[in-house]
Length: 317
Image (cartoon, rainbow, N blue to C red):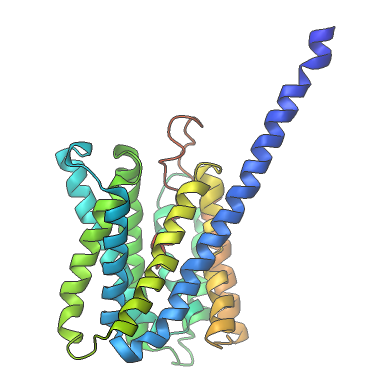
């Protein structure tokens, strides 16, 4: 009888502990998305001083330098194929950052973020699960409302850049899942980010002639810390407290956060159609993630290294 009387106590304690961890993880996830989008919004004014490519290149360069100095990955941490995957991850990270920067130079932040989100959404829709058709339709309607082809109002080149960023984000998710499953800790990120920096600077270098000055360069260091370094750290900690499915669902809110920050920081007030379009894309992301998440691993073994079906900060960090 006494065993029966006292047995619920540790269960309740464990449940409370998990609930607290989930709440902290949720706050970390929201903070991660907010810093990503705030960093993107604050980057836009730098385009006039450094150019779009120069801004993206310097931001990645600083992120790569800082992360390499902090983590210091060792060659023995990587098998041959895993190192190749890290290099590939760096290339697509660079493409994702560059194309998104080019997109937000021509499109409102919320619109560009929602269009870029089609990358991870596509990964989820074509993964395991059910109910894909309804989420595909929701996403399609959302894109139609975002682009408003009946008005011809969206910048065609900006649209192409956002879709290119979406394709890079999809590749980023698949490579991140592989690297996260095979490489310990943040060593994979500490290799991929410097690779991304080198690729971005090779693209940006021809546009930086005569533009470099200590002021803008140091501003880019601050923006690199704000995003991607802080969001990656927050995501890493959040993944210790949330399941992949829960984290992916949370990250589906990022286009809505981008819309809000775009309105506050850049004064980009959306019309009713684009606002509804973002809502539909967010809804499709939540639905696709909940119906097609990766199988959950055991809590102790692999949750800290697992990446969710819809990755967050990588999007436009």
